[in-house]
Image 1 (tube, rainbow, N blue to C red):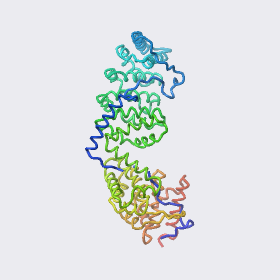
Image 2: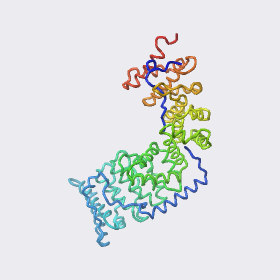
Image 3: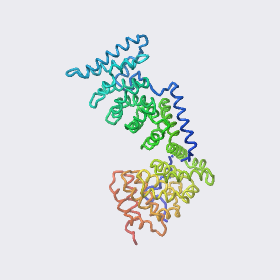
Image 4: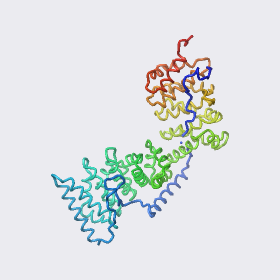
Length: 502
């Protein structure tokens, strides 16, 4: 084995020893049924709570032009008949404005929509019935047409939001508007327009299963989930509330689909850590329905929880997962089941949790190495999607080393390294070196260093050469990333220099 001094070694290339960051608890059908029943009960209670399933939008959204100057005083003393008359007149004016052409026509449309919106948002009891009877809904749908200015779209969506907050039959009147409301959730819409449309959809979803199924069939879930990834707090909050209305039980299909969307689990965890109490509350309701309705979601949330728990340092791994303890054996068995799953995110989270455990003590490395996990991880490294391959590679790399301390290269566990290389993992690591992702390429280089330094009888360089590893490393010869350039060139110079083959 080569000398480990700083002068004789390329830059530090140890595998990601502290890569930790997701454990499946098996859930029986009985428990799942109980959770579904509990979710339905929670939904009933929530309707009666202050946080209602449907909400009237009374104030402008944060960030809109009117947010600072809009008068928010509620009309409380106006006679119902007078209010309905004014609403009917506003709808008639909207009909006229939509048919007008020429100079000033667009400004008139927006002003008339704003007047109708104020009647629907600043009245103690919004005159929804009068607006519907006057024919407001088809006019508002027309106002949502693509190419309309954002001000017009925002006012029209706001009107529809408050109509949807009415009685069941009033909410159902929005059926013709749903395709456009969903379409305006898309990336081409402004954040304000998308957020207001999400609010309207949340009100419709809060009405009941029939309308929820309609929204799901028309594709509302994915764009709402995308909005929940937003960095704008109010947008994320509105999207989370709408999603909780959309996925609540008893059918688990929507919950299973939601948890499978890329980035949604990360967004949930990230937002639960925010200081915004309202945001955390809305996201927590999403978690309640996900965990009540979807065993996959429950598994992922538990996986992420375990991964975060052991991600900090080796002490947490040793304290939480004691080798030889039945709890640890059950945890490993559950992780292995997740690695075998057809669910992509489950496999990724399980691989990630496994990499965190493999970064622990020598006993933890032996436990994983001697289990069914190792061949499964090697198979994933060869065949899985890129993000899963990277997590599997972290685990396999961590199984091969123990930290040496004092800045020295890690000590190689030769038995593990030989078994993993002979099991066919080397091409997978070389493919990572070829990756455009710098973190993955660095991980690949780190493993190649272990092979060339630690494989018995100095056969490591020959194995790397056979799998075209030299060519993969030479792509960094003039790379803009100095660290990667130095690492790759150092490895090539050290193991494939003038004396190579002698």
